[in-house]
Image 1: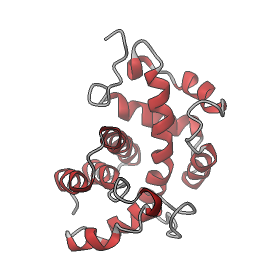
Image 2: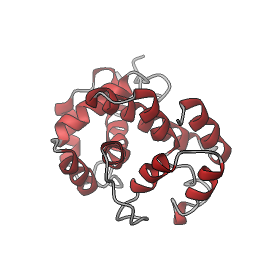
Image 3: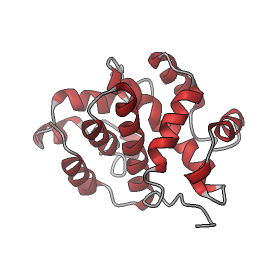
Length: 188
């Protein structure tokens, strides 16, 4: 089974840009929180979250097209690779999120971006970010404009969950990693 240690080793073999490591950590935190919410294997889901953008830095225009072969060669379970490929469904792959873990990854990948942007604007960062404040920013299409809100809504619909509820889980998960994510705020 994919461990967080192995996921970090693999990710760091292809990824050096600090903002991409922060994103990997954000998605790892969010996936751990989703796993806890659903009673799934937290460490395993965190590992998948950390590894999800394995090829992005090297192949941003061909994201996920250079993931399967090297991860198989590294001994990553094909089921885990399927989940990773599915987070690009309809964007850069035709691999549909067809299980709970894949649906969660598909949803939180973009969601963490808006949570991160919200937290960066606050004096106390993510430490006191409320879901109501998040929802105001979520509705503002100009805020964190590159984050695909329709994709987040589609992911939440697949999970049978409201955006507000998914956001709360993600905020709680990322809050545990506030320092590592640089989200303690300017007042810290």
